Image (cartoon, rainbow over all chains, first blue to last red):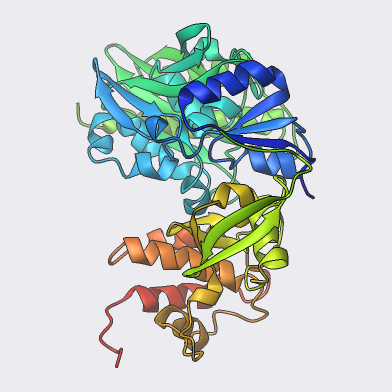
Length: 274
Length: 166
């Protein structure tokens, strides 16, 4: 299929992009890497009047460390972040999850912030953002605000971004536990995860993040006492999240996958050196 | 700000395989269609049109990506390389192409241009990759007839030491 017609706007600066968003509002879509958006346009699942292309904006193509946080600009691609020196040491959970994002070819163009904006419930980057208590930096003509990951992602493909707001960056705290693990189950390498599970060992407890069961990433803390306690907590979490049926998997299969891979991921995180 | 109206056919200038080219395209024209239908570079194949099969993979500024997930207007001013850039002008195949022929890495050949372009990028950036890494890159492509064993043999060969080259 081919997309419906749209006006194409390529601002030369963030200010121009914000002006264009203020003018077009919810009639426009922001285009960065386009690895989810263009596929949806091709299927005509979306038919915006205008696309605002921020992919080439140099001021957004930056990875910075400031105030103990890693800030990833809205034009930074997933592969660029994956190649960032020191990432595996500083943010091992992010480094572990990024190779599961799409394929080499889509990570070459797909952006970190675009994945957050798209808000797929099984996507890896929103899960890591929720796990690590990341923030989304949104700018509009009205000003700049930071939204915590869990208040940003509201549901399946739904976020708290206002129509005139541009995601300019996401930020992640650099001081996090390094005892982490990540696994997902997909039909084929690079496919969307059916279920993704992240674990991070904290004092006295393990933080668990689950993608692909609820309509957004779910993060909970469970006591890390013994295998049976952990299994029980994961079972309760599976029942709480419920899950959804689609052509890839039933809700029941999603819950069962959490019960099966959850304990493995927790064990792997506990096995990491402190 | 660059603005192109939805029904306007904009002049798109880019470099295709080292040559400056110019064509007209509406904003909604995909780069894959622009290459094939406007510029006549039909070596780039179109399979699924939603970023899954990898047949349309080209290099934009040296980076492999799916040309069905890029609009022609986004490639304005960029350097695009397609499978037509690989062999020498006299038709002599390059090392990667020769490896594909030697290891029976293609049968119908529909998926081949995309796979060649992915590995042109990957092998150019990664010295001595592991088999697992090569497999990961290949996972971004679908082949429906040859199977992946021959393709893996070819890319492992092409990624190896160049001692056999004349």
